[in-house]
Length: 182
Image (cartoon, rainbow, N blue to C red; front, side, top):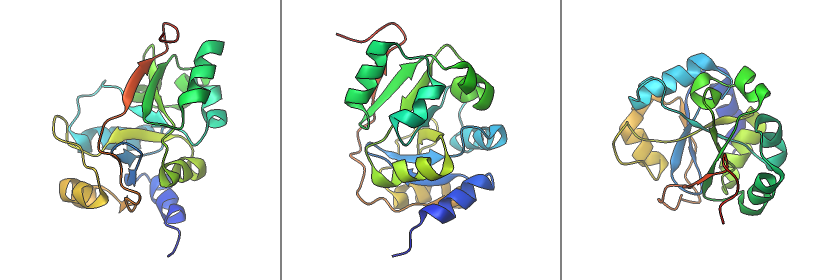
């Protein structure tokens, strides 16, 4: 089987939306640094402008320059990611400069390092990507590529295969903006 990641990276660099599996739900990716692509994604999902979108990284080393985590926060992230968590952390000045406002424009941003080989490979080769579920606003999220295709059709440039299949449970939100939970 041919590696689909190079084709997915080309689609992302062209401003397209790519569907991809994570450890939790099937997701939709655009480059976190491409404002027009993020706006296109927001429109495709039917979300209101200003609602935050999380960002996925391939590793802790990739995410570190983009967040202002405390030492305890860094330790928590290293212990729990990759995994089914979305970490809320203050964005760094670099994140505010490079990422679309829907990602790093607020006091915190959602951070994921999915425990799924395709998700991490996509982020490794494309750079930081959006980590949002494949669904229209207010509707049930897709768990597989075929479910996402039924929802979005040609609005999504490419659908990566959903093997292994996501768990179907949303990620657990952990707020590290006020310290590490007990």
